[in-house]
Length: 264
Image (cartoon, rainbow, N blue to C red):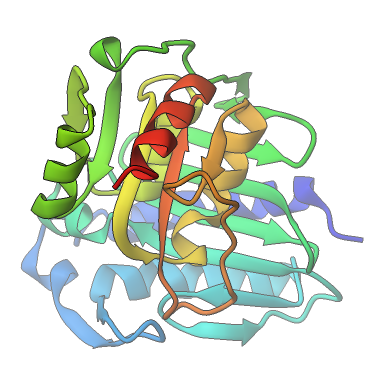
């Protein structure tokens, strides 16, 4: 039987090992060096490979699940009896490569049909977001929930959009007190989950299941809403080359942004 508790214990262990292994290379040209092309057809930086190797070794040693999908290695055998894990070893690798302290280990666990556990740790600060399906979401063991703000005028949002898309949003009434691009989508979705941001909107069409699976579960378990930008249900294939657009938010702001998106 798949054990979220064991999954979290292994994630905690590998997160600590990754922090130690990356300490000498974060913010250095050596860590940022592109050493190969990953399964997602994008360059793999050395720090990504270091982190991924640590996770794969630990998950295989502990036989946490049957398979793991990682953006660098693709789908690999882990040796457990059941379940699939979805890994982004360093979400926000550009931030890590230049020494910006906003990058994360993101791992989700599926029973083969649905995500049952999510784990996102900011590797620079140690903050850890977790969720188990049907059991709520937590930051460092304390329950979290999205904010209750309902007005754009008082909201802070993370928005990834090209200039034409941003101009169209503004023309249809989109305003926000604060707009941010923090560079690590898993952490940004978790910030919505704990009320630091009201929404996350990504219109690039590049988010993959490995980027978003853990944080989506965390945001939904916290009480937030996740969908395609227009409000339609969002699903990801087990394919690190298939990208999606995404909207996550508290209930009020999500409803308002999805309404505006349908006007574009």
